[in-house]
Amino acid sequence: MDELLPYPKRGIYAPAPSRVKAPSGLLHPQLPKWKAIPFPNFMERRNRLAPVVFLTVALSLCATGILAADFGPSYQVSVDGVELGLVDSRQAVEAAIDRVEARASSILGYTYTLDQQMDYTFHVSLQEDLIPISQVETYLFDQIGEVMKTSVLTVNGKMIGAAESSEELQAALDSIMSAYVNENTISAEFAENVSVTREYTPTTDIKAVADIYSVLTANSIEQVDYKVQAGETFSGIANAHGMSVGELQLLNPHVTDISNIHVNDTLMISQAVPFLSVQTVDNVTYNGPVAFEVEEVPDNSMYQGNSKVLTPGVEGEAIYNADVTYYNGVEQERSILSVNVLTQPVTQVVAVGTMPRPKTMATGSFIWPLRGSITSGYGTRYIFGSYSYHSGIDIAGSYGASIVAADGGKVIFAGTGTGSSWSYGNYVVIDHENGLQTLYAHCSSLCVSVGERVYQGQTVARVGSTGRSTGNHCHFQVKVNGTTVNPWSYLP
Image (cartoon, rainbow, N blue to C red):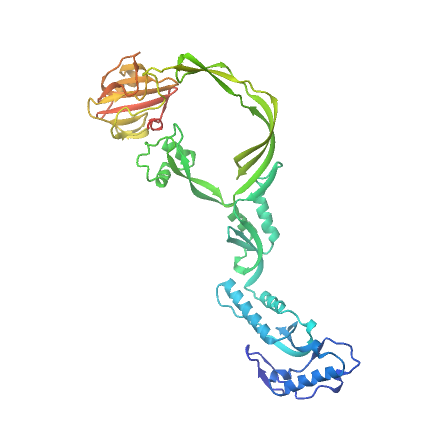
């Protein structure tokens, strides 16, 4: 029985080489140019016999007219009994094994060692019969059960999941995008960097495509800025965006008094944003109006700031072609490419007053009627043992302090409240034109009378506590076309 010799690195054993000479007919001159000559494993012995035999074979090849330069030593590589092919050295295979183990360890996150049995059989073969080492490396990598070549979906460089089929992943992406695509869409793309690649990944990363789709279509709640519009209240903004007042307060700790918000104040609100955002461009053709021009004519019979339409403008009509950009279905930009006017617009002629305005005319902006702390805001409040609606804001002041007109206008009420308005006590109402009115209540005394015109900043009453009141203050109220609105939206 042959003795067993250990391999130098992997601890695999192979039969010891035979000491018998090669058959005399091995190099018959009439043989065709065969591709490989197998030899027993005597080269594995690493003794003096191997070089002698190889030199003898090489000289014999030369002697028979076959170019020795075409042949060289090689090894038939087998993995777990499966023959892969001929390589020029075992060292190259060992280096490939090291690379496979290092790569697998990097992917799996722990040290990985191949457990396949590697066998080598010595040959003398043509150079053209050798297989590339990369072929051996690929085969070995494919034998790793914990790692699999899959289709990997990444969004902005973050892996979302892996699946065996790239077609299924692409179908999921197409399904998300198709919700925003129609017959007019000329381009569609994800706002994020999305890619599907073939990579080796741990088998634990493989997910059902349905689960990956759920991740891609999930909405996340993000915080965005919101500018307060005229007439809006803190609670109204919260309700319009599906939030409670408490939730909106948590996002805006800088708002210490929720009744004290102004036009163009910036609030932080919560808003649902899809995981994948889709940007599309639609090319649309539609009928639309053509704006008319406005011609102004000076008129010295009217006050400055007043105007009167002499000839009404009439919009024209045109056929427009435009590229419209959408973000998750919401229009962001409209680029008009062509306009085909069907009917021309009619210019509007407006008479513009040039006569200087009297001091008592409204300026269009308010000032504070009284400087003091706010003791009660606009909206729902708890007072006198129950919840009630507060139609204005209460500004504290010392007894007898001046209450001034927030803007110029005409006094339309000055007296003591009766019936449903008894709770105001002594109060004044000023009409500022354009549907705006202001009310000043709980006054100790009144300084104007009905029909009188007042200017902005003029004293109209004095602070008191008449009517239903708990202390000296001015109840300030604003109405637009008869409807009470939040005064904070009009005060500086």
